[in-house]
Image (cartoon, rainbow, N blue to C red; front, side):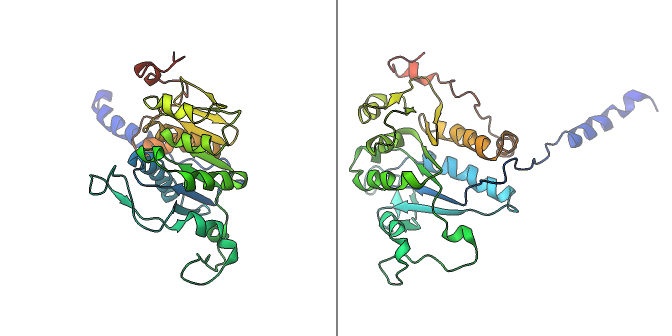
Length: 269
């Protein structure tokens, strides 16, 4: 048999052999045990569901690791919509706990008004939230008193906080971005930056990491920021494998940001 007759066979084998192998998580000592996602009326859908799907997929593929708890936090237990107004086009998400009940959980009162933490041998079920994700959306321009107060109270206890899009305005009004570097949605740049005069706003950035605070640019940038965060916490090989599995070409250069120029952001390059 001539060699060239074997080429189709070798090509097929190469495809099998080239399939990416699932890498081990390189960090196994300080992995988060409880994630929280803040929601409010008129949140931006992709700000929430983009990062959430990465985490959902991560723990589906790495189900043999410690399974973290995931909480969806809101002012009330009513469904929270992405719609701009009542009856408008949008989707809803159900909270799992209110801000007030989460903060009061140590009371462990067993009644209809106070959340009772489950009694279980699983440490992740009662662990404090370590990673809080704060989305943006049109709702950030409304009364955010409860959300700002929650972030201000929670931040000292968190390992990480990640803002998506105009969610950075909640962090800035909570005071936790003072003296920090951060970025936000470039179309909403003027308004968001006005909420944080003591913040060093970075005009050309897909996302910014400053200590344990991560902030991302507009909407879809939250996906790249989440992949970057996964890379930092779980290992870059894990982040890359996740992006291949979800068929997403992640941006790995945090400075790659053409949208500042598009929206005439001062200082954008």
